[in-house]
Image (cartoon, rainbow, N blue to C red; front, side, top):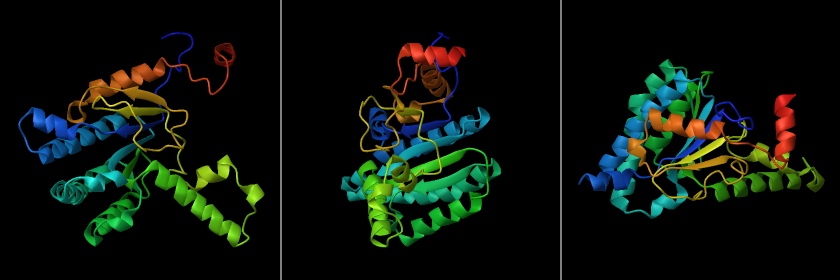
Length: 248
């Protein structure tokens, strides 16, 4: 470990779980097989995150742009959401995991909305790992809805325009109760944010890997965390200032 490293694991990790479809195609399987394999990978990663005492994980399960995919795949994904929630939530609860969904859930079927609400209610008092599922979510939507909320409060004379600052905006966003992600991981070889947690990842360390999501295991996660631990997080300061703070 070098002298200018963070020398610690991240508290909050954001993940874009990319590559399910390509993983399935490489094995001559239908795309839905890749998504099912991806659910298993997430389950194992959650178990490992509990083991290493990670505070929070936020995963990109379904973006607002994903509605543009073929109807058959969207239908299969919605069905997989329901079955995965119903089958996994009891184990999550048993492991003290708190489950939260971020995004506009009103676009989902009433059956899926009920499953989401029931899972959040069941795990709401848990104080272990926080698992945040971004579903029908986009970073731009998140920022817009935050500003809409602020505009309504200004109209109602609850706040003034002068009260609006970065801290207030952050409190109106999804994940307002969490610190911003320290580490952003994207699997599958793509190197872009894809409209995910745009405000919250302003100072996240960005880690991209060619590994397809179904193949992303605990060892791969450890590699990402080790990479993070060697990063010098300056937040606008000089390297010398950071070193001085670390050595004081």
